[in-house]
Length: 161
Image (cartoon, rainbow, N blue to C red):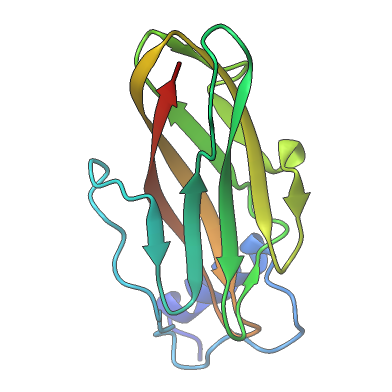
């Protein structure tokens, strides 16, 4: 007889679309190799975890009033892959002198969205100065056995001339 927790984990795994054809964990206690999600206020340029690397890069130089671009890249590690069915999104926040064509970017707008890499080329326009941008990244990296969504905040510092 299946316990309610086993039914929930099986349903969640199917809902999130993990691929690989393997059966979900029989114990109902799926494990996770990453650290717990951070508090929403914690932001880093790089999240270096055993199952993935999430990185923000702003190569510059940037010119005031001209469209610039920074990159947000999710790279799974080891036997993990980017879940292609998960509704991955990047929600951008910045000071008033910085504008984005869209405050939320989804997988459909990714430069690359494969099982090996999710990369977003994010356009912006800004006034001259130093600007701190944060991006709340909602994603899922999976193994054939387990798939757990995660949310991390990356920080991008822009220097605009």
